[in-house]
Image: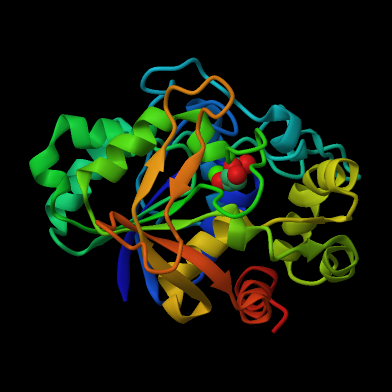
Length: 320
Ligand code: BDR
Ligand code: CA
């Protein structure tokens, strides 16, 4: 069993990643921290509590709100992808009796801020925490700045981020999480913990298609949530990319912790563009054969899409 901290910007696919993590016996979620990214850190925290409430009464891991703005640049959010509420508009949905289908969760945030919750959790479980980041790396970077010695006791980092041999999804060369806080990403890479990046190269090779989601939605209650939360997100992809489906960037990142055999990776020296006008947030790795000098990360290069989707269906949609 792996003990994890989930650091997320909840976010449609972050919510699905959270459900996958909570429903996977291979993982024990010790803490959850939220960061600004897809939406504000405050809404991400609310969305995290709302998603946890779908799982019943708890007990749940502590949830703390983290950093509200990137280290150096201005706040960038993604309301056009994840909706104004960060959850594809599901907070507006009403059932036939007029009540909210996904009510506001009861207050329940941990009083600590994100970095302090991370530090306390690593202190409780030194050398035993896998820190999974599915949003911009601002919280992780701030935590390193606050206590580098304590952060040395993190066992490994798994990060959704980057685009290497594919286009970016935010600019032609930059993936959203890295683009939103490139300085944080570079700081985390420089810190030198064992780190695996799960880039668009692999996450965009898997797609959950609308017809399947619609067909399963009347089954298990979580399958209905998957349908509701992905509807606008799928509309976005249908408009932008011409297919009625959605990417599962963040669930794939959690799946790597559940079953490392689902993805292949290569050691690489990764750098982030932090100054370029047109290339801000680009991740650059020398993946040329024979050029593996001074690796500071592993970069995922391939995924067993069918096996991942089977895991996702079984754990989150209750159908396998
Ligand atoms: C990443 O950015 C967000 O849109 C998703 O939640 C994911 O973490 C993909 O670029
Ligand atoms: Ca995310």
